[in-house]
Image 1 (tube, helix red, strand yellow):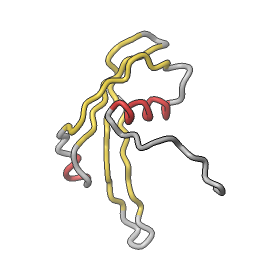
Image 2 (cartoon, rainbow, N blue to C red):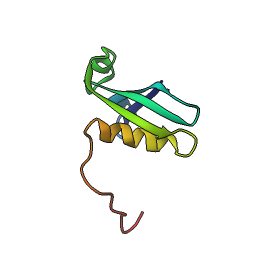
Image 3 (cartoon, rainbow, N blue to C red):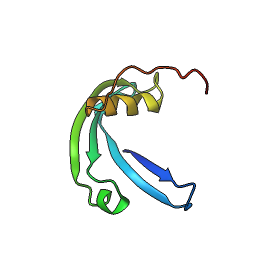
Image 4 (cartoon, one colour):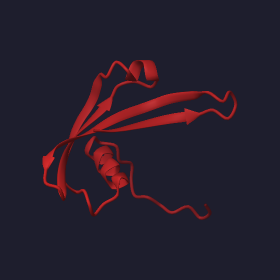
Length: 94
């Protein structure tokens, strides 16, 4: 299982606040190609996310485990769960 957690590190207080969490669970496939269940938890704090109430479920099918980076799997999981706002645009300066 892969756990993805989004945390805010405050520059003002130095504290950390967990904002979101999802799980990507292996549900089969082969050594090279995998199928995954995606579970997005409800909440915007560690306390609420620790209740492990699933807000959204999705599937990622046919992910090429050896050919793609784990970030590709995370992206597919988010898109499958309905999180997509548009095409990426490269910033002018980074």
